[in-house]
Amino acid sequence: MAVLLLADVVNGQLATDGVAKTLSAVSGLGEVHVLIAGQGGDAAAAEAATLKGVSKVIFADAHVYCHGMAEPTAALVASLAGGYEHIVAASTAFAKSVLPRVAALLDVMVISDVVAVHDGATFDRPIYAGNAIQTVKSSDARKVMTIRTATFAA
Image (cartoon, rainbow, N blue to C red; front, side, top):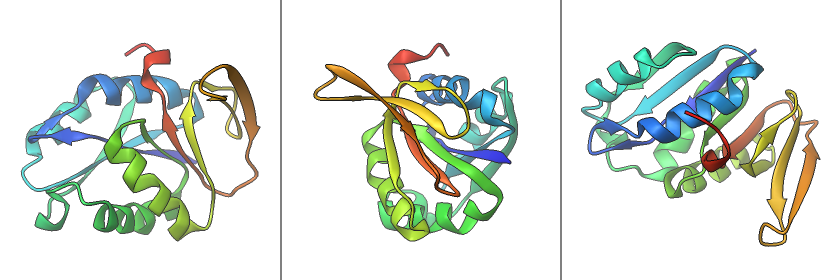
């Protein structure tokens, strides 16, 4: 199955570093589709299409998404979730407000701050204020996760 990567867009520009590092983290999980949500994000969508490993860019060009509001964006992501096993985003304030709502709509857990991807169901994440690393194996049909981008190369 494919991976849906929710991209951060700031002032109409793609947050390229975070998206590229997230892409690097999940590229081994399958075909990666990037979702750009927001009005006037044509440049961001065009830039996302040039990133190595992106097989498809989905551009939701509507006013309702242009302010980065979590509820409409989460509803959009959840409506697209049917064809994806993994829904991911860089671990940013935007993603940390959207992805828990997506997980709730899909009735699955959120795996936050992933620092290593072992396979499609096994991930490492820090716990105890980063003093320990926990390996998580998820049996959810869809894995919703944020990626700690500092761990991965762009």
